[in-house]
Image 1 (tube, rainbow, N blue to C red):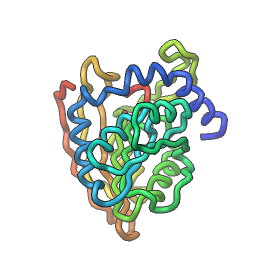
Image 2: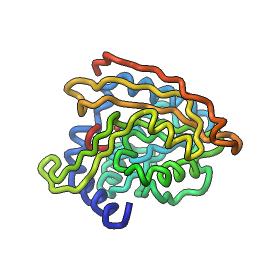
Image 3: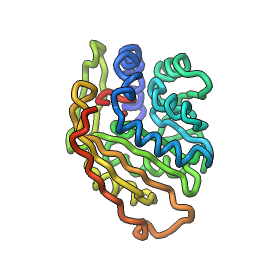
Length: 241
């Protein structure tokens, strides 16, 4: 992602921040399966160390984790989103940052929840993005990744009445698992679900739990994912949430 593209995404999210809060901030109330996965993430990292809500938007995922006893911070590219997050949730540090080049030391976090924060990353840039997430995770650190399933690329020039320039990339679960293994992660579990009607964009969703190994090893030695298909559910800081 070059500087021009980065500016397009930042400006676009700044433009829609108010409407985004209105449409997205309370969405977890209507997504019980997502809450279940976040509860599992919280239980895994709570006693281990700090975690990050990557691409936090208005901070609803960080708030949920904070309420469950996780020491969490939020990072987002958009200053307007960060400002909203600070207003809406006290007791959590929110700051601006670029997930492609984070201003964090190696091994800073015990966990990263990245709900739909990779959907603006093109396939040819995924290795850099996931490599940066691996860098800032502690050995043994947990990554929970959420994204839309498919092969589509959706471009928006208008979003909630605002002029924007953003692309949304969909991925297959096995494709993303391959990206993660290539970046040095071990896959713990992959879960898919159907979209919640009248709550979110009507795309199938994938969630991957992956870890940075406790010790460096051959990537090919990573354990195979346990695939679980979750269908028929009636229930991530990004437009096609």
